[in-house]
Length: 248
Image (cartoon, rainbow, N blue to C red; front, side):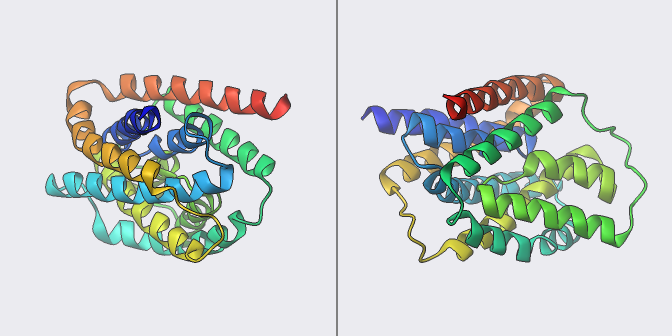
């Protein structure tokens, strides 16, 4: 009973982050699964991909309904990450738990810094070359595949600064990229030795999906900078706790 309640609470936070900010939620999902729900790092990465896929797809529908998804741009960006996401998914199960935990902590810390810092400028940047866009997409795909995080906290600024989208379409479009990368990474892990605890993953995902709807409304009521800083502070604490756990 307590495990199910913990899964519901953690899922709600993840869904709010993805729905409101287009990213950051999956970085919270992994440590929640490890430290709150007792998953191994490898199992947490796989479970996180399932949670991220369901939540990102829901939030994507909400943003698409508002006309804030650039489908062609998102598809091209995601295509660059397909192979890295698949390879990362295959590699993840072969990495030691300590190395995965260190990777989670590093990504959580980076996400926290990006969230606490000032948001990317609203005005679109000059479009970069094709190789720059492909490189950014490939890097994000690799992060998703190995660590099981959606990478939306990196995708949003990349879509603004590298592709040249404005902030609101970048948030919506990032959800398409996150969903595609998560699906590919999951397919690469299919039939692997890491089991999925559906008794935990199902309520976690359900709560995240429902909260993603509210996250979009939350973003319209609370300043985006405030939301980012709150989630960023939580992520920074999570990253610190993971590093402390590795050291002891």
